[in-house]
Length: 359
Image 1 (tube, rainbow, N blue to C red):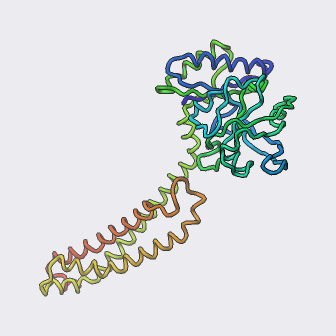
Image 2 (cartoon, one colour; image 1 turned 180 degrees about the vertical axis):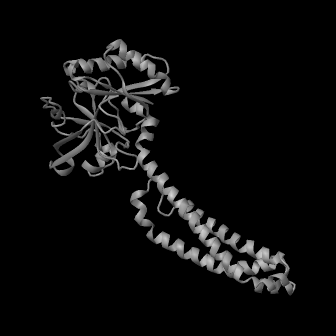
Image 3 (cartoon, rainbow, N blue to C red; image 1 turned 90 degrees about the vertical axis):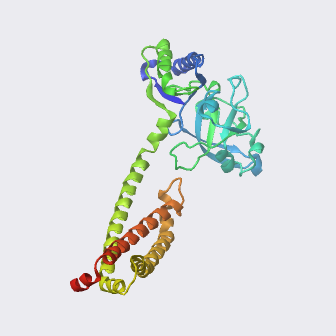
């Protein structure tokens, strides 16, 4: 997906001019090879613009009682859902037939149905009325009721870790003067989307050489940009965690290695009495291993007990992620084994008499 904004200067003229320009640009782009869907919208996912809508409507599910609605609103062209790959779960999408001469219709998302229609099955939301207030928010002197004709999947609008919000989609042909200051274009392509940037620029120049594209990015780039800050935090905290693990490993190695070294006389005596190298190393491992695994068990238990405190900072991973709880203990076990084996093998390979003299 290729996305871009088309900003219109305040001196461009009346809103009708900018709206007509956007539609002509879209018509030019649609005919180009490699472009499967072309759409316009007042905003895109992960772009903090496009506006909110606030209105009231009498709900048939609540005996005619009024429902206060606060929802994200998007004014879009018919191919918007196909361009972004948003699945229509019930009813139909917006079409070119939804114009000023047609009944007023909208498409809503699952969260809208869940919040304002008491979480009824989405199929039952089709055909329900939102009253006459929706289009009056756009300055329309509308008296006809607005009907829901489709329900689509929720889409992440603000950030990848943000909860979905109620959303309402309106056909651009049913709203006058939609794109007064800025329009967003989204193209779904059959090949590399970056290869169609010049195609979009050419269509813009043919319409008006004074206009220029802004914020030209693929959708992957927009997603990456939205994750820049949490990714930076994750890398920073991950680096601190690795550093802490290294310090803990170094301290553990030093303590256990010193503990085994303190038993050099005992291990030397065992060697002098005929114990093999593996037996000497095994004695050191058994005695140190009890303390090592007891410490790890206590540490893991405490980590699990306090893991819920991390839940607000996690995305896409559980507070008891097996990989996180497995890597650190395994690393410390390896360090602990090395701390026991290295000095124990050194004692076992040395002449017992020499060890006893040094001690």
